[in-house]
Image 1 (tube, rainbow, N blue to C red):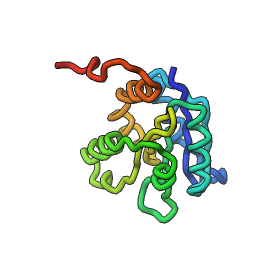
Image 2 (cartoon, rainbow, N blue to C red):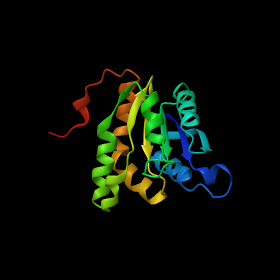
Image 3 (cartoon, rainbow, N blue to C red):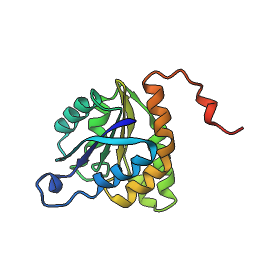
Image 4 (spheres, helix red, strand yellow):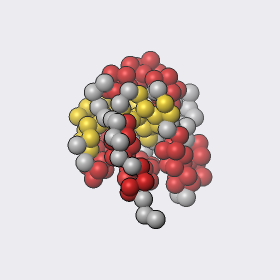
Length: 164
């Protein structure tokens, strides 16, 4: 079982002015990869708070999925906070989501989402809308369990799941 944390970044959501549909969408989708949400929060788009929560959950979860704050508005600071706390970036994850998103909308190129590793936790920034989350997670979902295994130290051959 993959122990997951979901952090929704939303000023309005954190004040109770908007229902969070994104966090629950993530929780439902990741069940198919044997992941369960143990930790869930809706917090405002505050860079220092985001960093604090990422550090906190990286000590407790295998997978941290953020939703929101990856666009171009002045309050979108999730990628900056993530880059400040990760030990190693995993650019292919965000690149794959952007490439897949471009098949649906040219606006996908505006995503600044990043992914990386802190300690033994994989951190992935997802967009804020449930539709974009579903589309992005569908692209990367089947690599998440393997990534988590490798981060935890699995010595299994990476090519074992590949079809020749």
